[in-house]
Length: 291
Image (cartoon, rainbow, N blue to C red; front, top):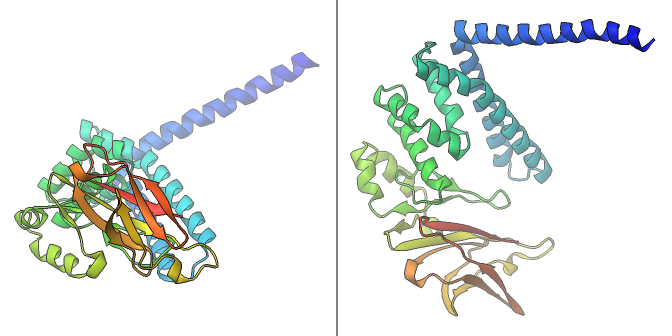
């Protein structure tokens, strides 16, 4: 009986293997014959799921669990797109396939939403896309700034902003002291000024010299607590007040690297909350959320 079962199963396994090989070969043929359609399809999915996420967050009263589910779906979609598109980019770089400018632009967005190691790998590819005008100046600036931000470095072109999903308001990540001049060199002076004008008062961007670092973030309200529990709270470092929270619990300030303390202290009635500070020598800022 066992022998008969084995004899019956073996052909079945070879059939599955043959089908898998055939599917893989078919995918390879499809990639070589029509990489444009595969990349453009991935690009469309990339944009659609992000538009859905923005619509959800703009509602303001969205259920937090729905946001979590949408973010998980986004991560899954990004992974699937990268698994499909990155091998095609590699084949294009090697010269084994051709890709149209429109599809190359779509591939840029798949890279833009990848992890930093993949972005670093394809940085020369993105720079070539910019030089050959496949991506425009703003698209290149977003890529460059995103690389800076993922390393906790100051951005240059004012394209990246910090947002805590629990509270309203966006804050531009800190900028290099000469960011405005560098943006002008790239032809983005008007864009820079427009973006800067959108951030006012406590949300105004911080410009950092090489010897400065920035700390920013939120003191979040406890469930059932009133807004007074997070508003106008003193933020201290080494016993000295360095900032105060606004009505959403947001704070931001900069200090000299040499004066950076080891912790922040949020001075509340009846006690304080201490949070460790850690900005490496090759970093420019730290984002802090206090629950």
